[in-house]
Amino acid sequence: MAAKRVIIVGQVQGVGYRHWLARSAEAAGLAGWVRNRRDGAVEALIAGETSAVEELVRQCRRGPRHSVVTSIDEDFAEAPEEPGFHLLPTQ
Image (cartoon, rainbow, N blue to C red; front, side):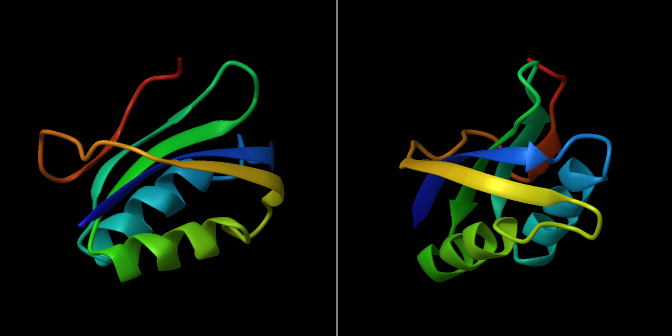
């Protein structure tokens, strides 16, 4: 099992990025959360099978239609305590 915290920068708010990421994570059987940040980025914690986590991080570099990702910062993290993938409020 692997867990990564990612911060996605670019035109990623107001384009459905959080909902796309949540749907993609759920479809891959991953746990974690995603939220907008006040600085305009999107932040997520993605946890599950290592290959599925790595694949979703790769997909995050493209994002959904209408998004423009300019950079992604990723770090290893602790897996979330609760199951499922959640949309969190902006922080």
